[in-house]
Image (cartoon, rainbow, N blue to C red; front, side):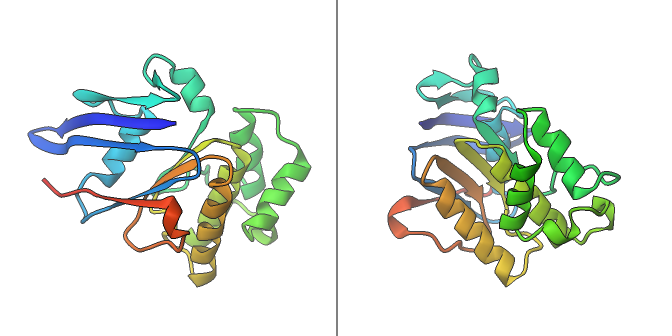
Length: 204
């Protein structure tokens, strides 16, 4: 479903991505590893279309994501290192409006996603008043509500306790029943061995 072909990307005079290529199909999780500065976040952002590589291309379902950007984005959910939440809105409001941009979402769906991520108890508070781990759980609920075939995750277990890290692994396993995941990680995520591919990036 996803094919990354020969991506090269520079940041100033630094050659961050050097011909990165990989393919991933439904039911697979690609774990991006490597030291800080190796280009994991840059690669995720390039796949998502947030950065334009100087060379190479990204294909989704056999078509260039540049040529079919709207269709690709409708099937994509991207969760960066910092959760995309508005601080003055409650967790519930962030999900209602954030997901509502993509599709109509019912209150019962939001409640179910909050229950799934353990965020229901604090979803009525302004997110600026939440801990980093609580904000991450709200963002994970948004990931579920996106109903996307492709998840791009940048350090998804950041700021989470042991239970939260186990939750992320459960959510990824659930996602692999219907789509695929590309995740940048510093520590391992417990997933079925046959469904995981590690791709180590080297710092320039």
